[in-house]
Image (cartoon, one colour):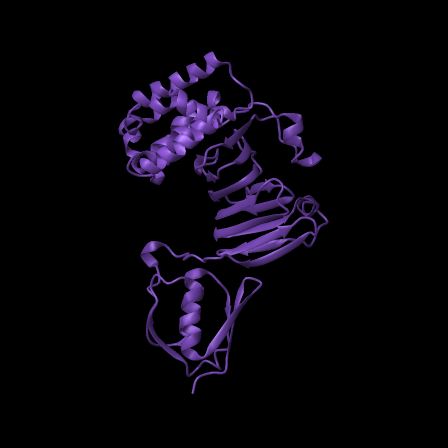
Length: 372
């Protein structure tokens, strides 16, 4: 029996039994490795990282001859052994930290041409590229990059303008090597989170299925997986507008006065049903604080008027809260609600002053009979 408990990632990549499981799906090998993971939990992270890399080669669009596969394995082994930071390969045994996965992803990028985790495409393929664009939106002659995340972990990428994109597993993004002088365009299939660099009048556009998301500088997430009837855009900070692609094209006409679609601000999201051209705007499931860490609200209240509490919640989360201050003029609150999610804060506040709330069109509406 081989000493698998001492294997590194490169050892797994060269092991016949491991490849029989990952590449060929042999039932006996699958049962062996499932049991082995249960018996060796401390090595499970190392095994799964090797599995991600091997599956990237397996899912390569163009198959490789056995000799070529062996060469690719040797290349990644060489990089692993002579990396400037060799301890990264030991670090995986202890932690699946974000920084490690970024390092591992960067290593895969170096050999990605052979492994198929990231495909770099200098020319646009007519069938794949133009299908997602209308005639007036076809990409220019600038070469486009095709990024495919075939791993089980998110991969962080830097776009040509310095903006950041975190591409989720089983997702694909395309963008030009150099953004156009008038706008920045991304094509997305799947899910990604963006942190966009503010550039004044040059908008940042994400095309995902029938939707167009337009921003000037913000952090947001797009979920548009192939085959799903509904797509979702959620805003982490800043502001975006979301509209159907046909409406987006129409809005660019000089005579167009009204632009359909919805505008989202921090902690808001929209679910779009393309079959009915319907937008459902709402709060995100777990609203997050929008203020910088050094200016974060403490949520410590000492005989504080309810109106002031609501105003502080509005500022902290960037969420619209509608209430009648005259009804609440005698209501006060004494409580510490640090590290308590927004909805729990609202429930505690409303319970203490005999009120209730509901969320309508991403706005919080408070109802109360007042306090004696």
